[in-house]
Length: 323
Image 1 (spheres, helix red, strand yellow):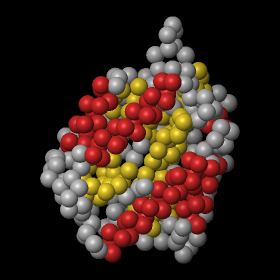
Image 2: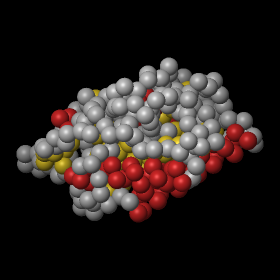
Image 3: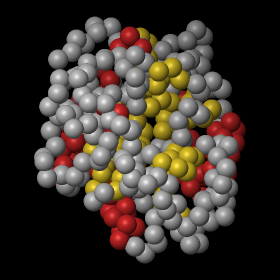
């Protein structure tokens, strides 16, 4: 088991008029680096190749080191339009979207711990005969990520009830592995007493994702996605974190194309990738990595929000798969 620090929050109040709003601020001292055993996955459910062979049996910290952080499949392959693989990736995305919606509608609420949220999502994934892709990916210990307020991405679920205080925003990022394909999606949820500045951030992030998707079609430069998202964000007083990006996905969890602002190349039919902008309050978007090796939190204490869809470039446009 692990020890829970007694002091994990401080109030994000600023002198005079509040710059970023009023919300609990997560501190790097709250990072946990040892975890209970992972939630079980039935043996009949197919696992990605990157999951260590002893991940579910060895004590924490003694897992085998995977040879690679991704599946041992050919990277960068496009989806064959009209093929079985297209049907399979569509199904994985459909199930992922359904689970995220169920979690948002029925599980996300003040007072639930993020570990309880992770357990509920894990159960939903298993019920669909799928594997929670994050579990065991580079030894990640949970089935989803839960990023709150000033955490940009990759917050690790745990048992602290303070993480779902009624004035928090919380991002849930989940990916499932079904029939050999990954479906990846995320959304930021607003708890009942989030202030106006927090709601504006979340709304703008959703709009930024929509704008990024709209530019997608065959022949368009991949970098155009980041360009329109960046321009929109700056106009509204936000910045975009560039330490993470969207990515190609299919048989492999993370693969080319990488959806960076300077990514070369054009979109082609069969390209399947995620668009997942992370907007940060203010002009400084860079994050610090906590000692747990996963949690990335803003340097300034500003809040961050993220939304994500997995999309497929078709012969004449783009289709959102995770709806």
